[in-house]
Amino acid sequence: MTEKEIKKTMNKIIELREERKNVLEKLRGLDSEVKSLEKLVPRSEIAKLDMVVNPNLKV
Image 1 (cartoon, rainbow, N blue to C red):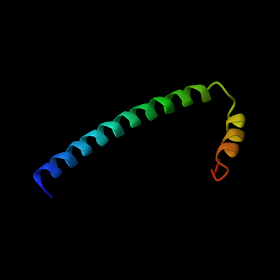
Image 2 (tube, rainbow, N blue to C red):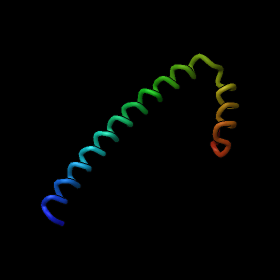
Image 3 (tube, rainbow, N blue to C red):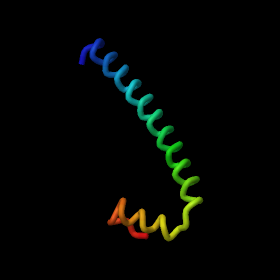
């Protein structure tokens, strides 16, 4: 690998790590929002939803 290729690859790694960090932060925010909303609904209804959304989930 040439110096130029290494630099280009390193820049891509930095870019992708930053993107991954942003996606994880957004996911944490969404997870927090979902948990807040779930507190407003009876657990039995959440269980029904879980079965529809992910039938393989063990509730």
